[in-house]
Length: 619
Image 1 (cartoon, rainbow, N blue to C red):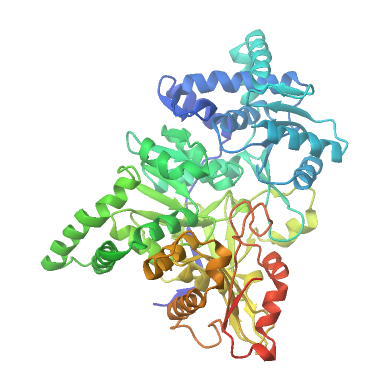
Image 2 (cartoon, rainbow, N blue to C red):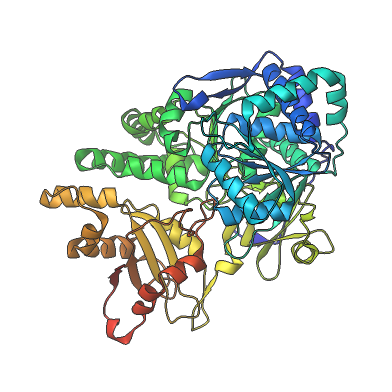
């Protein structure tokens, strides 16, 4: 198949605002179910109709105005994903203030930077810990910042306003000015007005504030509506950070469509919540799908053989289906048996009502998507950035090709530069970076093309594939270019691999750092020697474990070209996390931070005395 350097999906998208989206949906569905959540982290689900959401948003919007915050001012939200987050977001939009999402995992200095750079004068916080973080951050910048706390707490600081008190004051103001005045205020927004400033997590340097207008996000909602049809009874489980634009835009889309949204207890409870909620639409990053895939394929004994047989059978069936061929009678019979014995159980573990998943934020391994398709579960992999609101491409039921991020959404143009960089043009492209005109000029050229920094290719049918990131491309000492992402994604499908980072820029050969799946290593040792309950350090010290990891990794990578294949393996005891600074809040590895942190280990790979050693262990 050949490749092209340009594709577009021409469409006339009406201009609009998010406050208009909110009012329209609330008016049309006042009695229908909008949100469900678990108050106070209980097991009880509380329902909220569109009408109830409308009244809460009115109260919060007037509460914001009652604190002296005017149209065009900035208000921050420092909270995990929860129903109050969405209420405050809609309230800010209707009050005409710009909300500034802050990832709940960020440390005080990072919070302080965003508060100061954005000029935020109010912070909504979820827990007492987040409120204390906001207080500490405000002290660092000597800012006069008001703080509202969602959770009830007996130890609330004097200068922090409780959610119930804030709502009571807002409700009083709302009654005083009346409903008509609120709607007039909400409808003052213009499509080109900035709705929000989102600070990109970034892998180096200070984050940049991305200014997205009402119409940037509204156009993405409209485009998504044309890609995915609504079905009566659709509902979604929300657990990704609403601070990230993907979940936030999808939440607008769900609200606009009339789909019920349930807020998960937390990221850690997704496996249980998904069985309870039984959603039809779920948006996630590849990490969730990787965990499910490994949990299913990592069975032991006879069960493992059964899963492997079902996986092979499903792969043959999927190959026929995706190629437009009808599977043979014998294959159909085998597939039906595989479905009863394995795939049906996979669907049941996810509630049994999934209509489709959406995957974004990072590349999804083809093997994993193939497996889910075989199991009767569609994962619509897509692409976009914070600066593009975010969706530029996504697979759909009509246009589905595993290994790609789909065709452009309506109204979007995609071009591949001479250097291989993906360029985007469309109504979803940001207005600018906040107070950074030079950075804006570098990102958006004179013809309106946004330069993504990602490398990709477009096949002759118009499907886009992401092949790497310009800053991540490894150029070896011999001048060979290696894109690490596809290699890393391939290794993540191995049952013994949890996290992986490839290194080798300006060096003689590539190497790979691996955080093993210690639970699977422990099971392997238990089955082999009858020894269990071994900690990570003890496991990595075993020569048989090192030999196993060498065999597994090199076997998975045996089809790579010699210059692509890593020559050394470093086994890491501690996982990469947001808290230790090796992951961004969107789960992307900070490659440079990892390389600096493990510099001693990496340098040992290239010492002459270690020429014959292939597996190294972090000491």
